[in-house]
Length: 120
Image (cartoon, rainbow, N blue to C red):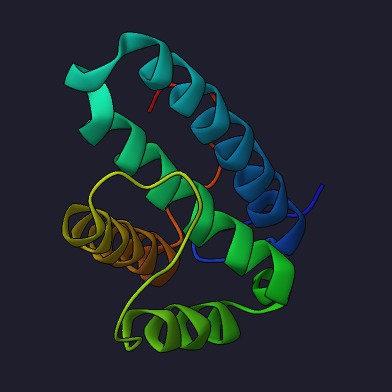
């Protein structure tokens, strides 16, 4: 049995985490849509999470920790973000940037990719 430390990058675990976050964010969007006008911010937040995770999954950035971090940095450097189902573009941009920073911190420390529950 190999002794795997907390700093070992596991691409399969990161891919699984991205898949679970995409599914959870879509479910959160549906719940927010049903909540009406008062939950539009929650819908934008879930849309931001879905967009970031989908883009990272599409690039297959999880292969390497360094590549993952570089792709996140590239994403953060974009001027604007366009995604479907967004209510407030400014708020959505803020949520995307916040989520990218959260994911960058997770990638740097390699902590949190084992949590695949819907609510985190």
